[in-house]
Length: 298
Length: 195
Image 1 (cartoon, rainbow over the protein chains, first blue to last red):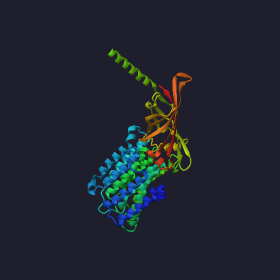
Image 2: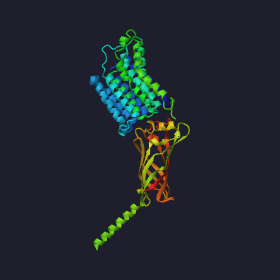
Image 3: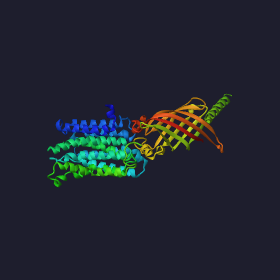
């Protein structure tokens, strides 16, 4: 059992995928979408993968990698606040939270004062994440959500995490790559079940504002760390990886008129449009990988 | 008479202190003659060798009372090399030395013990990636002498060995046995110039 759990492919891909599927089934058949218990399950799974990848929390955290779990925890605390407390202020809160995370993770780099290409890319990633998260989390659910709406935020976090994982691994930052891969697989499992439900004529379960915030914050802060501290990660690919939340905001409300009769297709098209910058990021990272696209350590 | 005795006593005490201070020699590490090397397990196979080139620091050597000696040194993480460029850049990355966030490794002694005339143990804080751990180095004074080509230049040479575990520091991929590590053997050979 321990050998299975010690295999990075299990903890980075297979296990989170299965747990994402289990969580989606729970949301479909046992718990209402806005249930705090469901948010707690997301939070617990997120912390499990942080712990598994980064080890137990260190107090006080010194290196940026040691701060990530505390940032995730802060995101969870905000995410577990009652919906009425988050409300329309979530966008503003997200902007503050992202700016604080960027400064906390990167203060040593910022204090170094060198404005090299990596630093410019990190600033662009931080800004893009801040804007995307503020816009995405500020949006209120539609009174009668179209088929693709429950997939917009999950697709954004999934695309960000998946491309971030590949860019990170190709940039010789394996730990953050594994962590982002776990988040991507977890959300991938969720999306799979929800999309099957849509294909069968049902309605997909919408993430609560809290779940949306905690997952987006977790994935985005890891990507910010990669941008700040992995010199071999492709700068253009990092910036492209940070764009899916903005793409999700742009896609919202536009497909219903473009594809009025294709209800089951709309989540898929929305997902592809949201993931377009992430796909470009992956291609960029592979084509311009510093040592080819070979995985593994030298 | 009493005043004269007091002055004499003070003069003796002052002279003794000066004599004691005179035993403590200050040295500066000669970066061009410093080999900070390490070996570390490579995956499930062999032993990888590496070296830091950029080192600077100061040594205070008190031969009369070795416990008053001290060492302070700083390594440039960017200077690490292992005979393979890709591995070198990976080592500087966030999973290992994390040079972008912590560009230096430092060592500052806290205790120096004499073993015999030429050997001792230097205990101090080794700081890697912002985390300090106590390590003890077995140190040998190889030689201290004026340079044959310049009598005004006095150098001392030291050799030291020690062990650390990468798991003690925030070096995730060295700690979990994925690629390199976790046990690291350190071999240091340095020359230092007397100031």
